Image (cartoon, one colour):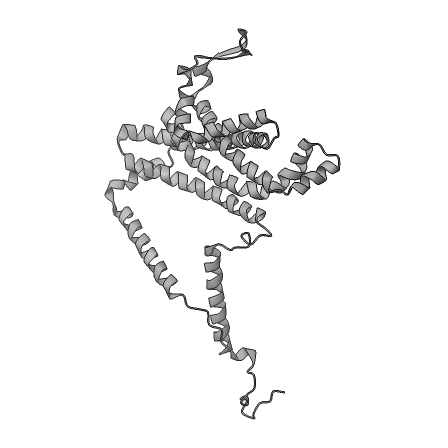
Amino acid sequence: MATTTPTGTQRTGETPAPDAFEIVPVRHWGRWISAVAAVAALAGLVGSLAKNGNLHWDMVGHYLFAGLIFDGLATTLWLTVAAMTLGLVLGTLVAVMRLSDDPVLYGLSSLFVWAFRGTPLLVQIIFWGYAGALYQHVMVGIPFTGVTFIQADTNTLLTPAVAALLALGLNEAAYASEIVRAGIRSVDAGQTEAAHSLGMRPALTMRRIVLPQAMRVIIPPLGNETINMLKMTALVSVIAAHDLMSNIQDVYGQNYQVIPMLVVASLWYLALVSVLSVPQAWLERRYGRGTARGAEVSPLRRLCAGSLTVLRNRTQKEAGR
């Protein structure tokens, strides 16, 4: 049994009270030195850019909220949403076809992925933009009979915006199909067998049993694909689809201020990507629950939590004095 002397000190050989220990965190001096060096380098770069007169910050501020820029932003956003929707729907269909036991469906889907994933996106955009040079008319009818139900002029039907949508959507479908296929194959085969034993048809099993469980693998990479799609819309400027980059090129083609206008485009792309990164991070945490990776905390949160802990300990120590 522990006893104390009249002066309040413990006798030799006795265990001290827990409050007698002072917990000191490990000092990572290398991290602090590297952090200070990185912040100093960043401050020097930002200061250099701020003082550089060749950037013409007054022109950047003038065009940053111009009406032409907002028109391009609207086109960029609807292209992103429409292309991702088309890519996800078609990619899911292609993924199911690639998992089919039918050799014809498997061969056609594999050919689709091979063609659209194997050619550069820029080439596909230019191809769809100049499709009228290959086929002057788009016809729907019975093959090899000359019977035509619908006929339209290719250049009238495939406007630059439609050509951009087809190029972005079909290219995304090839990549989305691989993501969806990986998600479907991550579900244990016993789930499908159990559903079939209950009398569920294959289509119902896929819709009600397999796909909901595959979302944990599918959703996070698709969030990253959405951010990538937003940036890839800049490529459609080669066919003048009136997106953000197309309008930026129209402006610096007239005033010859290339760098300031590219800064305007970069600021808007950074802002849009930052906004999209918030739901992407939430989805990753939401579908990563129950896994070791899902329990990780971001460095910024660790820094804020560490700072609050240090302040709390210091406050308690000063109050104890």
